[in-house]
Figure (spheres, helix red, strand yellow):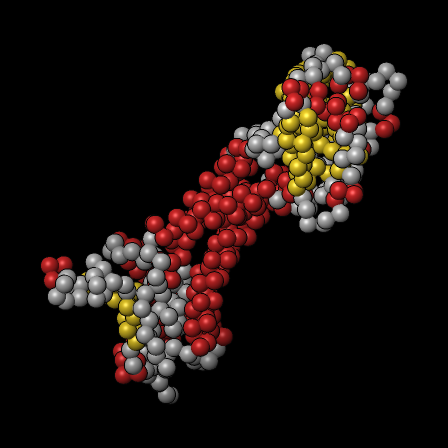
Length: 501
């Protein structure tokens, strides 16, 4: 019978053994694979009977069973192996990169997070401003009365070229045949869409009528949820607040980038808006005069208006472009808080690493710091998208709650992530950047001031030892790295025995 040692079947068996080796934990995989390959060579060269293929296949199948049992035994031994899948620096960065891609993908699937990441759909968003009273939590709450809006329409033409007023109200919409749905409606003046100068809202000019019937624009989510994405709803008449309104179209997803959550927009003419009391509070969006917005870097203006009794009220005019960047401003603020709190929660020094000309070249030092910088960059990326995801999922309909949740989540995850980054960096070899293993207790606590007492970790490749003190003292306050010379190499890297035919 022809020997199998040179056939394709032997290579297939060797490939099967390599697949089985992935079941074995990292620290045991290399030795396990060498042993089973040696046994495979012995079995193949000793079998020449017609049933040799079945015997060899059963032998390879037993390798999978042995790998599984070995993994179970190591798990039952109770030894913690936190370095199992992140011990390699490349694998650690790849794991963080996958987390970042997953969080970014989830953010783009949510409408609120996607709106914060995509550019504004409104033309010249810098001159489109949101007017709010000073100290009104950065334009997040309605703070302008309808009476002030009417006064600005006639007295502030030198500041604004056009203004629009809207309120967010919760109303029941009667769609006919006894069906009623509850919607969050932005009740706005008739010129709102003309003021925004955008194509994400439908053109409703064909629905203007002499009777002045209000026009209702549905959001894409409300259209799909309550009207099952039926095209016949455009032109349909519904009852809103006891009056008829025509559904004039459906807005595109993420069309609304202004304060307040809206499922629909009710556009009413000046006569209907005038029925509201002068003390009705809402939002004001306006177009600032181009002469006041010559500075391209300016996104915030301040306006003072005289009020009754000789008082002067202050109002802030914030561009929609600046408003869209507020989630990232909240993220930066929370990151700064986490950086300030980090020294109070963990030790910042990475340890003492003596200079070694043989194993401490410039390229090795740069690689170590590049690895730390890459982990921090990926951490910022992950926390940014995760905070947006959680804020949009957990927060209520108010934007202020969303920003509060984002700040809280960013601070908590960023602080924990920074602590993990420093701890992970301390537990890595400065030469190969692999996680140090096999912790051993050295010394006695009762002799802490007479002899060294702490934990000793080792680089499995043989680059050195790490000594971590149990109790920092004046002569041993932080961890220390000890390089090993070439005489230790035979212990960690045994020479392979070469078999010749």
